Length: 212
Image 1: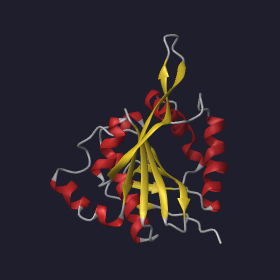
Image 2 (image 1 turned 90 degrees about the horizontal axis):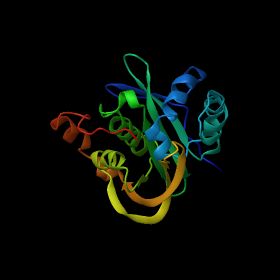
Image 3 (image 1 turned 45 degrees about the vertical axis):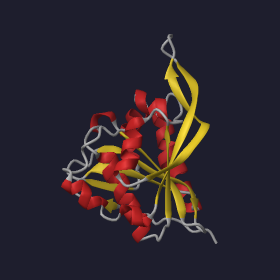
Image 4 (image 1 turned 60 degrees about the vertical axis):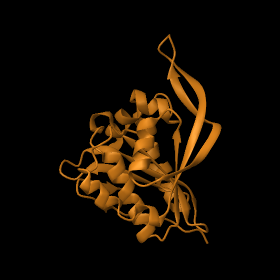
């Protein structure tokens, strides 16, 4: 029998992680058309409002109900503005493992939102859902994403050579695909023990300009 993630919200000091709804279409469209999001993700080009609506109303719910994953809108607690996306994919309910990724809107970068949202999601997965492993994959040149992984306690396990397809601008101002390596990170329940306290001692989540 396939297991599924619950339809939940997760709160932190500054953020609320919740299911997407149709009110998020415009903000999601703007975020996914950002240059750096285009460079490091496989988002369709261009990312239209119709595509955003289909993803919110069809694709994301289907991922959850099928047990494959979960997509959460990351919003500011005070303003309710869409900050980014936390996504779980490739979930294995027997092994109790899943792959985590994150995207942050350009206006919200540098505030530590990616690490705060990722850590809150990891804590929820380990404590409430009894998961035993979270995996992250970051492109070799995506140092900001790697800093987020390090900040929440992830351990680098190695390199998948030539396994990632990123994008780069062409002289004609178009996009071309470039092949690069993936760095594989893992996070286990014991890895996040004390992470929140360490972040508090170091001044909080905003030490890195994390974006994706």
